[in-house]
Length: 396
Ligand SMILES: [Zn+2]
Ligand SMILES: [Zn+2]
Image 1: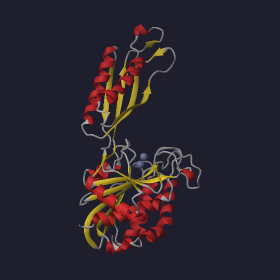
Image 2: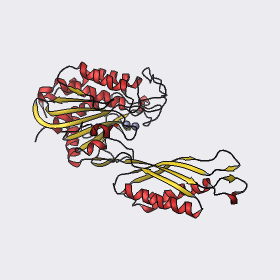
Image 3: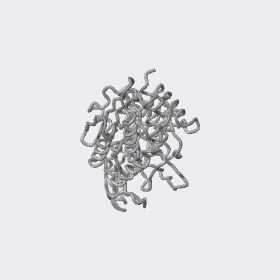
Image 4: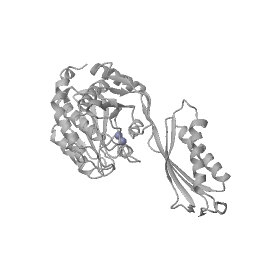
């Protein structure tokens, strides 16, 4: 391990309060996906205030990228943080709660941005000893498909990047722990839309109608067979119908019902197989009852698949930086992340830094109106990032 890392603990400690301050500022001033004007300006200004040799650009209207060339030979590492908030009304009561009504940092992206700013500040001071190049990727719009990552990749931010990493502060994981996994880590989140079209009429004369509600209910029930009966149980997938809308009052059978839902999976072939199986069910059920349908299946982000070799190197380095007991192997989750867009361009690892603290009542899930993170997780993320830079960029 480099000499520079010996006093890293005290270096991280020296920016801790500032990192927490940035996180609180961002938490108080959340902005929705693709609208992160003030947020990206704040990032830009903060990076500028560090002075030194950061090459800062704005690849898209609300994103920021900074390049730092180290003084030693080495590889190029992309380090990514997302910055967008969600359309949720915050129910926390701390003094830095959202000032922007109906918008909230309920996923921890405020913390991601703050950690990456702290990392940039510290690495700038260590520049002569840094191997290779670090590319700080401050990404907009993770929460809203088609996502900011794809836009940034198309804008060329990954050009020359040889490896890429990203952290998610993770509320199911206790603060002090780091969760990592090689291979399939987060699912591909796809969306579907179904309309069942029957024939409306009087509720007392069903024989004159094609009851779209009764047929659509059968569609929902039968769709459950796609995952539970048609797919291999060890090939993970989820199908949830999450919206079901039809009808207006007690004595009218509505002419149509609209549904929406999500499919989560890992294996690429499933994203072709599942829509075909779904359509077979929808067509069969509606045909059987004299109804018709429309069906649209939209592919969301690709699954996050962590590169085996880079994950192994990163795991070793995290165990060295923290300890064996801190770094845990986690099972995959069915949540989605557009970090996968960067993994199309370079081998990469996405990993979790625990943010949960039962004693402080920091227990709410991501996207909950009372979500927050234990801020003692922030210096852990900074330390992890810096160790990763030295380890992954060193030529071996
Ligand atoms: Zn989220
Ligand atoms: Zn998130």
